[in-house]
Image (cartoon, rainbow, N blue to C red; front, top):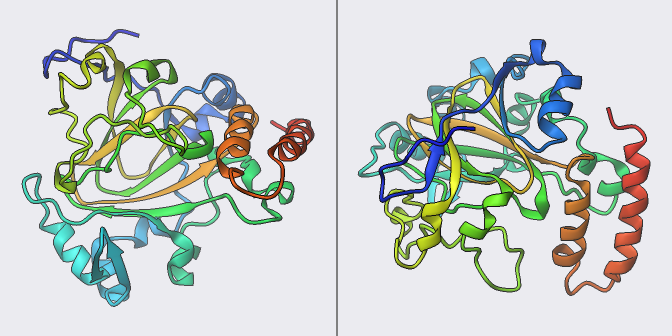
Length: 306
């Protein structure tokens, strides 16, 4: 892949190349072979058309029918109607609050029904199998609503090495992503928790968080050597962001997004290791026993993998 020189502070270098396919033409076999198994990002069109949300979920819809819905964003309490007003007036210099990682299970039932079933490209999701979910769901379907200029607060890869599927309903987002082999340049946050968050672009003031154009060149000097990809996601598109890929996003126009995390044969080994090391830390059940169970489950579910 060709990486053009990025003139912003002498790096990192970004390519704008990402594969885009219509789901009806791509097909599951090729999708798994060329993207899921090799952990390669891809943007898919035509996977969301069965969702009522594709036509219903506008900003006017949320304001008119769910305006009284209470929300909490970064310590601030406001209604859905208040959020929508601010989102529609948002600018890069004065971005609106960004509703992010809001669990869909906390939304009214009719809204949950508007985004079912999940696109075929998110399947199979082993997290939903009874052998995994019997003691509690590890699947998180989340809502994001934000205005022009808002940014996801950190550069990260998804916890427990799960895949991320990001489904754009309204607006346009710009993503940047770095493959797992770029981790030496990511300045991973230290501490007892899973090392899936970068220190780069973190600032004390949340309005300045994730300013990828103004990272600390002296503190994070190696970051200029990183090679990534920068691309946009448009309404009706689904982004497959594989396990272990560092990524973050900024909003280019008022945006509504749904995400779901997932595990399958491609990332099961890394998920199993992370789950035993981080999720089971401090729990009574011995991690070794959990690891043995997950080894069995992985082999069992692998028998039925497409």
